[in-house]
Image (cartoon, rainbow, N blue to C red):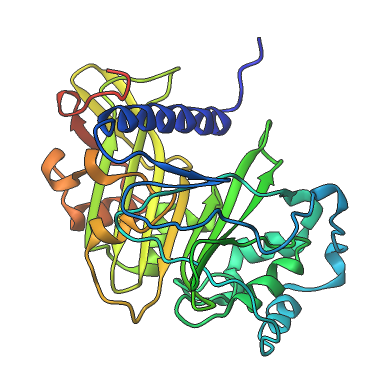
Length: 345
């Protein structure tokens, strides 16, 4: 039997964990209002939906999508093209409320290898756009037409899921074929009144979105939370971090592997690649706090099982920043195993 690569194993483990947590959540909510399942989008208790969601465009399959030749447009042309004034009117998009968690069935995917240099350049330099700006798209400013133009240049026709008269949601899924078996990489845009409000980006294992360069660019976070397990699963011990940068309008979710060779202590070292998910919002939005802001996300993990690092280790936020960013430092964060449990326990 051929063992899947570590990155793919992590993806499958994350899927298993999400399924387990979802099952437990459904069981716990059996006495509450049932979840409303509307076509491919389900909204939990607290969200109001009056009619089935209908995409505003007819779905276009990948097979029928014409993918432009990568050399036909530079990344500079890509963003410059997207800065023209919008000319069309589309279904508006959503700002998910803190009480609504959304689950979206992935839309048609594009292979990164088919996009070529344009995608690689954008993921590596973000078109010199400073977070929370992503690929020239700025939460609170950019209109949906601009989002359409950028992703159309990458060979994707966007579909919008209308949630009400003023809000909608779109998700673009790439497949990273550089990892055996492929790993989905998702970009999600929530919009209200035709303006992007939130962006969620799976940056994968891109080197410039590892924890050290991110902290160097964003500065120290105000809070750092961790969730890990009491035992490994299939030889892996996920360590899920969420870092809150309220002044930058960024939450970084970062997943790496811990070490359980010591039965009493989980050791988490940062001399390895991790997977990064970014949640971005408008810089002029009110600071509503870490928990409420994270709850607006679709893909960030629920924070109920997370703990502040200063409560479960000898590191506080300042020590975390110093230890992770110092290239001469090989210290690892250690946390007692008995503070954690596994989802299957």
